[in-house]
Image 1 (cartoon, rainbow, N blue to C red):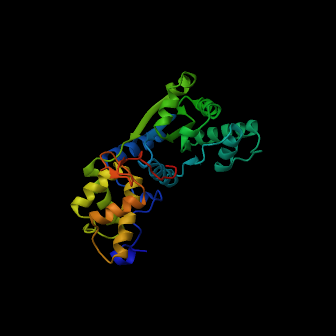
Image 2 (image 1 turned 90 degrees about the vertical axis):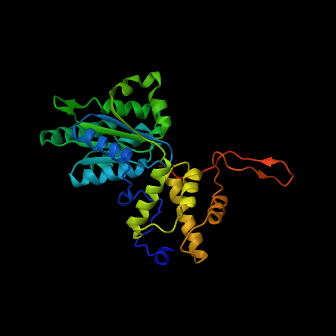
Length: 295
C-alpha cells in the first residue's frame, strides 16, 4: 500500500521468509555455512535452534535455494505435528518415491533404494524438518533410525532439524541420548544487538529501493530495537506498521509518537516499559504478549 509513496520496488518488511531479504549478519553467515558444510560433508544430523522470530525459516529457505541450485534431492517437512505414519508418507511425497506411500515398509525400501542410487552417483539426499520442537517422541525415534543409513563414505541421508529452544531441551531427555550423540553440528540464532537491528532495517530498505535510509530517525531505530527485543519478525511487524502509519499521515519520516501508537495497536510489551495507570488509579502491567506465526 505504501510502496509507491516511499519509492519501494518491493515490500521491505514482509513477514514471508524471503531469502532475497536475508540480512547476512555474522551469525547468519555462520549458520548458513554450517548447514551447507554439514550437507556437503555428509555429517548426518544437524540442529538449527533459536527463539521465535530469529529467522530460522529464512535460513532454511536459503538452504533450499542452495540444494536446488546443486540439484540435491531433499524433503522438507513444515508441519511437525504428525504421526510416524504421516511422517513417512510426507517423505515419500516430497521425494516422489515410487511405492505405496501409506506403507512404512514400502517407503523404507524405496527410500533406501534412492539413497544408495544417489550415493553411487556421488550425491546425497537431505531431510529438513522445520518446527522440530513439536515432534512427538516416536517420530524423533524414527528420525534417529533413519540416521543409521550410511556407507563407508558417510551418512546417506543428511537430516536437519530446526526448532525453538524447546528442541534442545527435548534432545537432552534421557530417552533421546542416542539421537543427541549423533548430532554433529549445532547452529543457534540469537536476537539482534542494537547495531545489528539498525543494520537489518537499513539492509531491508536498501533491497526494497531506499539505499539511503531516511524513514527511521536514530531515536526511532533505538526504540524499535528495545521494543522488539532484537527479534527479526517483531522488527518487521513494527516497521511495516510504522510505514503504513506514516503513509496515512502523508509523512516520509516516522516518529516516536507513531511508534507508541503502533506498539499500542500490536499490544506489544517489553522489559522496562513504563507502567500505565489503570482507571482505578493503581498500576497496571501485563505480561509480554506477542502475536506471531510459526518460525
